[in-house]
Length: 126
Image 1 (cartoon, rainbow, N blue to C red):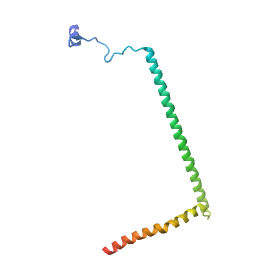
Image 2 (tube, helix red, strand yellow; image 1 turned 45 degrees about the horizontal axis):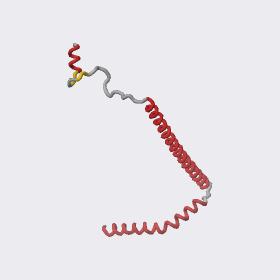
Image 3 (cartoon, one colour; image 1 turned 45 degrees about the vertical axis):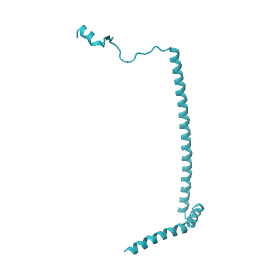
C-alpha cells in the first residue's frame, strides 16, 4: 500500500490514529498505592489460605474419629462372630434378640391383620 492509502485508512471521523498497541492505555498509578494494594491482597490471600487449611484439618480429624469408631464396631462384630463360631452367643446379641422379641408381637399382630385383610379381600373377590 502506498503511504497515502495508509493515511486514509487510519483516519476515522477526522482523527488520525497512530499505529501501535490496541486497547486501554495504562493509567499512571502511584507506585506506593500500587505496592500497598499488592501487600493488602497478599495479606488477604494468606488469611484465606489459613482458614482453608483450618477447615481441612478439622474435616480430616472428624473423618479420622469416624474411622476409629467404625474400626471399633468392626472389631466388636468380629469378636461376636468368632464367639458364635465357637458355639457361644454373646450377651449383647442375647440382649438384642430379647429386645426384638418383645417388640415383635405388637408389630407382628399388625402385619398379620393387614395380611388377613388383604387375604380376605382377595378371597372374597375370587
